Length: 271
Image (cartoon, rainbow, N blue to C red):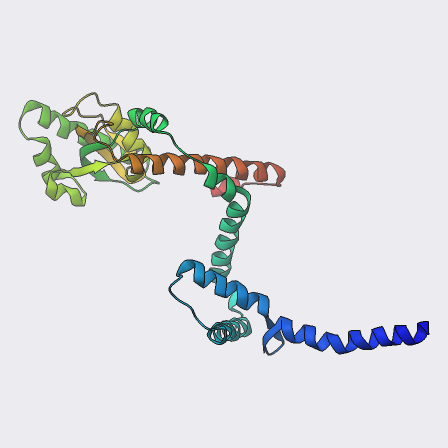
């Protein structure tokens, strides 16, 4: 009796297995199986992105089939070994790692009005003009010295009243803003080079001019022409910038810990 029952159960399992396979498998492309779960996930993704769009399962399956035949063809051509493609894949993996480890924490981050105001007082939105001499990042100290000396000479002309700052920018500046007298309009710190921004916010009042300032782009003579108060600021933008800074700090901390666990060496010739 037990043997008959066991054979009966085995028979049921054998008969049931093709049904389970049929339910799981939505389509097959060569040796690759597209599952019902993949179809369901894609349907959910589309419905969340645009609830007004309701594609049929048939359309979704066809989309996944076309995607798979393309992937298989790309692998035949060894595109997955192409350095450019590998770099793109690595970038996706990098972002996926950050999202997996820090995404939930990023979602919980909030900035109060008092925090935003305190941050803005140290990082106000400013309007500046500049006279600019272009230099490559690898410029020699002598080249930097000559560019700085030239800007000091131009600054002397401005101070003596021979020429206005705007006229000096139009005449000497190597920047598209020269046509506007060097005016860069109002900008927050995310739209200015860090060294430029630090030098500009040290200027006490509109009309003050800096000493020559080196950035990766060249050397600048900076004039402060305006500074918006907290009342005038775009608070949504301010909070966005603070959140971005905090997220970058978390990313840097996370990657720093990974780096400590890794075996790293840097060639002197690379520096």
